Image (cartoon, rainbow over all chains, first blue to last red; front, top):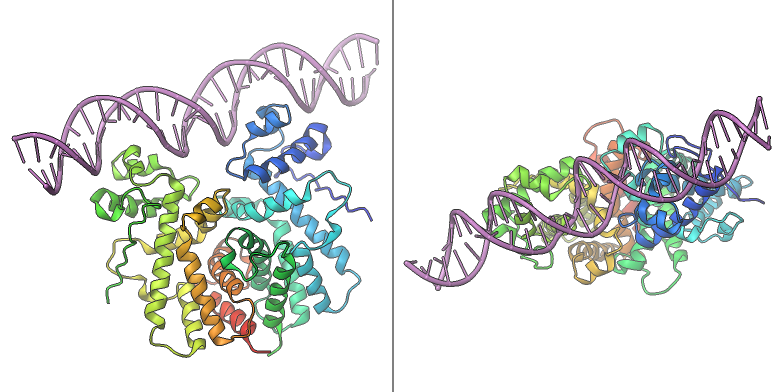
Length: 226
Length: 226
DNA sequence: TAAGAAATAATAGTAATACTTTTATCTTTG
DNA sequence: CAAAGATAAAAGTATTACTATTATTTCTTA
């Protein structure tokens, strides 16, 4: 199966489709590495231009600004997760199995991360974990939201909430539970690495499985019919 | 009861104690208003200097930079929450009552916010909700953490985790549950306001009670002995 | 294959940010 | 009253986040 995904060129996200040119693809590829290394604040178009041997102005012809570029990555990521869910769940019926699968995907412990595209997925996931919140924790949230730029995230949340209510149609907080789990699946690994006392699984390496267990426990406990 | 709280001058947070001078107090007071209005990114020392009729350089004699100033506020806030917990819980025995109280405090639906200090607590809470993550989602996390600047947050998390394990000594994820609840108590109200489809309680105004109900349900479901 | 269009590079420029430095003027406090 | 310390005033720096202009390369397509 070919896991190549291409974002339908969203002209609000990018000024021109970066997948459609050599320079564009180079921008994406190198930007992911650079931004995950430097972090969002230290990352600049100028530094990226040096790395790809081009100019700031050329990058600006693809992306209005840094923030839109970040959103481009997040959109890519959440579309990809949604896609993974669709592929993994389409032949499943038992909602509890679906839920387990989703948590497995969210906590990134799936091998399907390896495909043919030249995107450094590990670096992309680092960006998602460390920078996602900066996409919406800005005074421009409402503007960005009205441009539909959070759609993939909201769609996935809705999708997960839908499966929660398949499992227990009486549960009243499906969307909040879904967004909480999505957030926690990013924050807990970050805490694990940098502020381990906020979690119960510091120390040991490669613990995404533990986060998954915690979230499974959380979700099934919440959804249990009382 | 006097709810006045003063942060013991943490010389890593501030270069000199802002509570100890008229200018310092003015900086704090006006900064809270300005930062909550402009948001962290748009807030600058220069703009603040104009508002308080002083100079950038004078502000820099109190705070190394914007980020430390943010940490100062967060420290104040989490110390205050911890204090509120101590006051509210010290004569309680039943862990389930304690848990309910904590969630009430976390979701800010307590009236004790009104006291004599001239700090605009509503504005402070807006800052906490919208900017907290930016305190630790930075490449300098580990440095800042080793200066103990996240201590109040981690202490409160530990405290809550402790009460969770009073309620159910078998539950294995007390710290992760505590940090998840602390995060969610900030994010859910933000989502409610800006991205309501990520929650189950958009629309209706003043819904912190609903967030509290969701979190209570989440916590007690998770902690229920199986 | 030549002409025109589009993309990219090279270069420069601007306003704002995040500071630092210097010097002068207040205000305490001993 | 003198010295120390705090604040103000003013200027300066490196970097950021862009925008603009012009030149060069590459891509179409007639």
